[in-house]
Length: 391
Image (cartoon, rainbow, N blue to C red; front, side, top):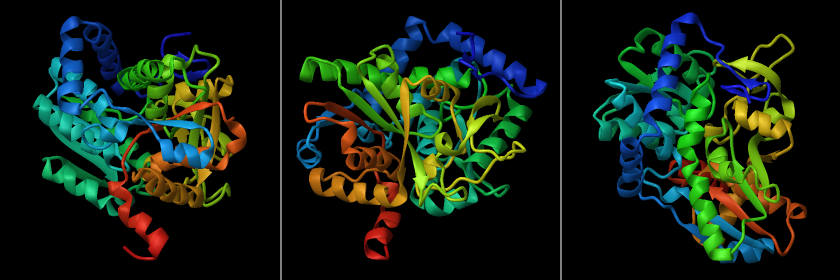
């Protein structure tokens, strides 16, 4: 596979002004990441600050409900409440060793922004977070947490005021200050080397999962199901199993209210290959190459593109692209609450919903792992409105 490419996807489609920063980052990652010093410090932070390893929990009551064995990889128990801290700690530590003084990033659901300011504080770096005005309004609890931790929040009013627009603004900012500032990309999107870096830091999920399931069951699972947009939590879980051909991998997108063109974020259902934010990926676009609007109740899944590696894996058939509709997602939250006493993030509930609504995909003897990527604190008001009509 060509460096920076996953099949036909990937690349570095950026202006000349960003090329130096990307080449500097690639060189630093390849030089610093493998060293014993970096690995010891990184894994020490994951363990002592983040709380890794996260448990692999046998969801006994949920399993009875669906008719087969289901385990939850409990990334919601990572400090901060989601898988996002794995990558944030890794990149912040790398930025510190590169001599950077400031972190900038984008966020939608707020979990990556929260993880970034946490990691920035640990590494002594200032943090500025770009966030669409619509996401600021619907993710107020995480915005308040980020402010309390000292992050500067930069509202993004351009475009639709959502994640896509926040990424664009962050890239523009980075072009003007890359000598002192690191863009801590939150998912496996963007120009090379970001997709590789993020997937590498998130692969700790799958490494733990593989060891834990072998200890508990004596074999690998039959299926792993993860929600996704850019693809970081899914690839984190999938990576060590990609060559395990007997393990089925499911990538669940946000379907929105329906698969109607104006009301969905299901890029694998509606998209075609195109370039966005410096990378060739599967993308929701019109016939002129303009980005089509996407919509889902889960802010973290409301991105019109799929990262290059997940695009490639789905195109070649190794990963099955799926979707869950908003109604199914909210119902899945209720089922998980009643069976296991857990409130999942709306993003995570997409994976749960797919397992609930597609029993034909699984047999009674199957062992299925759901990557339980985040907890639902940030979504409580939206969940209450769905069930009770008010918060």
